[in-house]
Length: 241
Image (cartoon, rainbow, N blue to C red):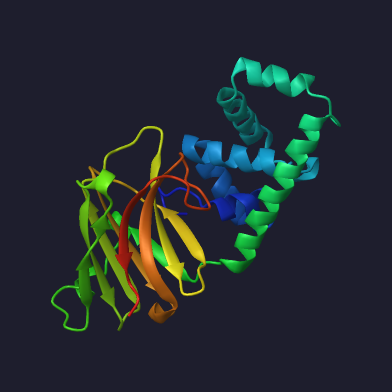
């Protein structure tokens, strides 16, 4: 597992559902042990999916997750949780919300399986195939009004089936993360966190078929990202050929 990269929500859910190999599960556990952001994301999905006892993470990791859950709730919220009747109206509403949220997530997981590889910053080693190449299409990103300081370029290489995105003017958020979304011609959407370094970022997509994709956009999301765009949009770029 690459150092300094956060684990995707899909991988964390597979980990909680015991769908990974033993080595993958150990890698994720080691990463989450030292990553507060992934601890919060894992805590969210553990609470949402209500994992069975035999699928719980290790005792040490579970203690960290439980601490994250308690830290995210105010004393008033913790008190309400213990006093709410199991079969009261509030309990029924919680069950309904969890059911539809989980159904939506599983539907996305089944229909929006990523068919690309993504690399960021120092992991990108093939950017020379974009420079001074006559077959490469380049265009600037289109920032939204609230993010006018953001600027960047996108290079699309049909020979290598790759998209290179470079951005500058990214403000470092404490309580939010930048996320980038790639949308195909069927309207399916996949998101990846943007790893910002000194206000800039470089992202390389290696796809199976460029013609399957229409556009990319960015947004600001809660810490750890989201499985659907929820925050203000930051930029847009058309990649359809």
